[in-house]
Length: 600
Image 1 (spheres, rainbow, N blue to C red):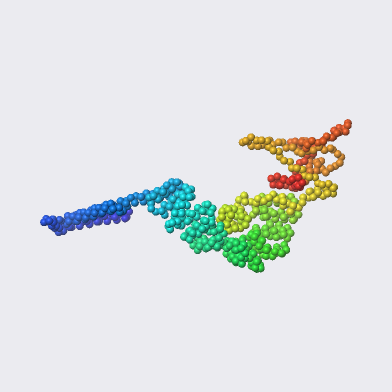
Image 2: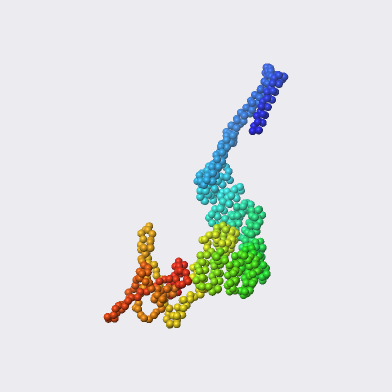
């Protein structure tokens, strides 16, 4: 507003000065005498000023008419004139308008409309570095990969758009899964613009996928020099790449270079467990047990891990369990309260058959943080302490559905990998594996039902051994197990209906006839016949349960003695029940036994 006031004030000052000057000339100025063709003209000062202005205007008008005439002559001769410039400005305005509308169409996801605007912009504008870029983006938005690739190849001929063309072709090859071609294109683009942060990340990812650890370390060094990565992150990632490079060098037989690379990787990142293990084994290969022990103890203090304990055990492989317990105290002392340290102490006590010490070392881990490992240790402790088999089976049953504990989990996609790797197998992210427990229940252990572990921990069932011994003394073979009754097939169900329990045939119990005799057979207190191992026979009263009693099959007729009454029929029923102290049978967990196998 102040500027506007100054402009108005200046305008009025100029008008006032001109008016005052004209008044002064009118009052004091001498007249102007002009003689032309024998005629004398006398003009006052004001009249002279007006005449001068008119003369200037006429001169300007004459010049403009002359320029127009010359332009018309050039137009007739074919030269560019103002008319051409007018049409050029019109075309340029329409071209930029089409370019702007095409960019808006690309941003809104309207690929076909964006392609139409790109064609209009290319027709009106003579700037291919702009129109080709819009055409490529419009083709990608419309899903026309062939046209987009053609446009990107055209952009390679212009130095202004060469980088964009290479990057576009690289993105297309990545979408197609052609990582080898994409890597070559990324290297070419990186040579043009080495400071592009997005291209650096893409190149580093492609180099790690191709196991080009040397090139990846060079790219990582450039990122650190340009300040794109924090110093600690860059050092750790360089250690990861150095470790993987050392592993591959070791696989090719160059152990000396691998040892040096592993030791340098461990020095750069002491908490990197695989680097510590490889460096310790490198020292062991040189018979340097002192540095190997010191390195593993330092790594255990930073991040306890079972691989570190395994490498620590390799230092003295032929020691006794008691000697190993004493030697491992130096390792456990580095981080005594960690869960891994407690589990390791308990396992060492189990190896030494010191079950009370194992129980004390384990503490309440099996209750507060139950994992397969802690529960298995607890089951072994109970077994070694002489606990009942049902207690051991109870712990094993809990272990079937327990978590497997810490594992190598990807922080990006939560993928679980059995071994550490610098690149995730699922999302191909670099340096995203951490040793932790999976966050979701679907990553829990999918181990078997644990039945095959029972003979190793609880031994042979006692009552089965007694039956076998009794049969051996009597000189008879033990009875074969009865076949497991199968559920009859359901009746046909109409489409769209849900089957019910009533659609199945009523169940029947396998029975057989017997003559009464005074000889006492091997039966229980209820008079039932001996059943298969794991089965308990019992007589079923007629008043108990709605079960239907059916005969096992046609029996040969028995001729009764003349005049004697027909002997009564004794019906025995075999009922499947669990033995005392055993958990109930779970058909969905325990394997189905075939005839001839012992059932528990």
